[in-house]
Amino acid sequence: MIRKSLYTILMLLTCSLASAQSLDNNTQLSVMRELLCNVSNHTQYISNEDFKTMIIIPTNDGMLSYIDPCSYKSLTLANIWEIKYNDYGKLMAAIYECEYNGSTNRWEKLSDIPIKTTNSINDAFRERTKHLLRNIIIKGDYVEGQLYYKTMNNMIVRIDGVDVNSNIYGPYQMENNAPLKIIETFVENGCRYLVVDGPIMGSRKPVNMLLADKPELSKFSEIVQACCIHKNLGNNHASTPFDGEGNLSYYQPVFSTLKKAKPQYYKRSLLFDKGNHTVYAPTDAAMEEAFAKGLPTLDHLSAAEKYDAQLAEMGEVGDSALKIIEVMADFVRYHIQDFSIMIDKNTQGGKYNTAKNIFVKETMLDNRGYEYEGYNVTGRTYRLNVEASESSLKVTDALGNKRKVIKENGLYNMVCTEYWVRNINSPTNNIAAVSTVVVHAIDGPLLFSDDQFIFECKEAKYYKEQ
Image (cartoon, rainbow, N blue to C red; front, side, top):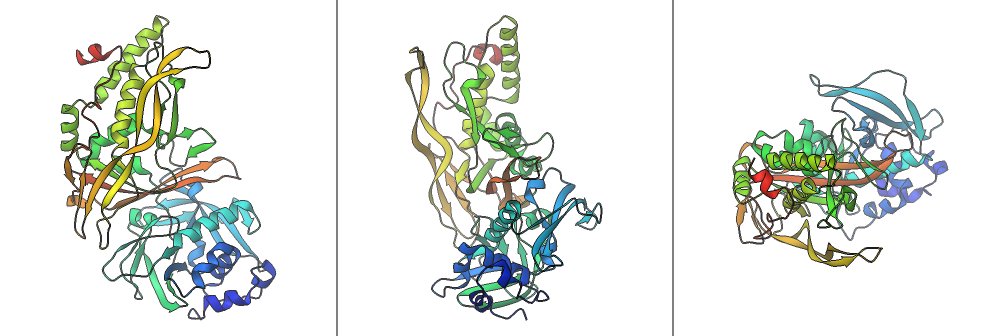
């Protein structure tokens, strides 16, 4: 029976594969019971009456539909893991390449023969299932009237209610308007169990694709595409999305005013680290205000690239395009807040850090003893002040400009997931970093400095005359 205590079962187990075999494989929750048992640091959340926890727990049938986030390379192709027991009573996963059927809103196998199988002693299996478990455990109990909650993985989950047949959405379910259904619910040992028909999963589309899908945010999206999109990053990080696309990262200036600065003097870094973030995306009308204040446009960037190409033909190295990208990226980074905030009941306002570091320009020495103008990172970031209520969000920037989150046309509380993967084309691939990001449209640009659009580069006069 589903109502049978998970805590009681787990306390009777030694959390070994041998004891797991004693479970009744026909019970609807046996797969998740064993996964929870074998990931030892999760048992505390189902055995402590001193704090409240919610677990969105899929049935055995639901565990046959887990989409591997490391296979998010296409909107229509992905790998589904059927997590189940093999003929010997051991947990395993049969992995199938699948195609998305838009008419049925379902994934369909391209073949009944799996492309690969793996089991519970395999590192990839344990890594994926641990990620899955952290997506389904919520610290804290259900609050009447509150819709959005954060899991242990900082993934945003929407819970419309805790009664049978109520809807639950993870980022993947929000993206596809395909909610999970609560089959049964019960409370025991300080934990509320919401039994559902599938696993909570991250969205297939990263932030830049979500922005590109919204016509009202096209100009901000274009700036993001121009300065913050990369498919690959150092330290063996590759983006999971789609050929020609990529995740968000930014150019970190090491020094940028050297007479012959080269692109390799800029390094690329993750724009979203592990955790949860908010992006405030100015509408097209708001972006016109930013352009009027001096934010470079794509035409300016194109002119700078042409100028650098002319310098290259003469044997010189220009950094004009990189200077413009740096200004654009700083603008984007100030619109990214550390910590995701929804318009919802119990949302907390306050002052939040952004992704825009505070740099101090100073004279430095390179490894040969030559001086150059460089940037010293102070360790501090520019901040935003957020006023939150159950029905609205207002953001005040460093210059005192107050911007409102726009609620028309569903341009708020948009949730997506950003994945970076190691060894992306290898059978041993694994998740290097994952972030949950909430996107809200705002009615004006956010500015951190009166002179943030003032920069020096050789083609400044050139592009302004084009």
